Length: 180
Image (cartoon, rainbow, N blue to C red; front, side, top):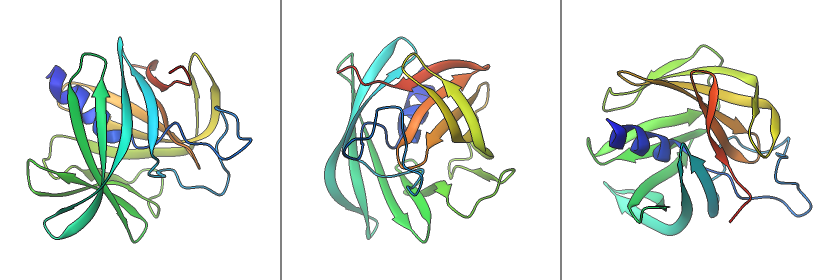
């Protein structure tokens, strides 16, 4: 179960350490995307951390994805394959050799969808959430609830910046970090 949770959370993180010139670490970009596919970032997750880095493109089942490598503190490596199409961010799921919608820009609060594997049910909660991390107090975030069999996370995304953190039982347990 721990591996499933870590893998799910890793796969759900898309963007953190990318900023426009002059942009502070805690600021998003008002005209940006909630899921910009950015090159490199560092994320804290519970009592560990990982780097996520863009590694180029890969073709899977005839579709071209951006390939990201997640390098964990303990030395393990995970891979994430994402592409954008018609306002959606799609993730290739090796389990099922097909895609799961990670986000659709046309979804409204209350919209629900499932992963292809049927192991996760997502709900878009709001575009006006707040999250306090050790580094920032974020406002106007998109919040997506992810229900697994025995656990529920809420993931937070900042426009123009991407993933900034997650909560478990209303407590922050993951966040972007400027500390490398």
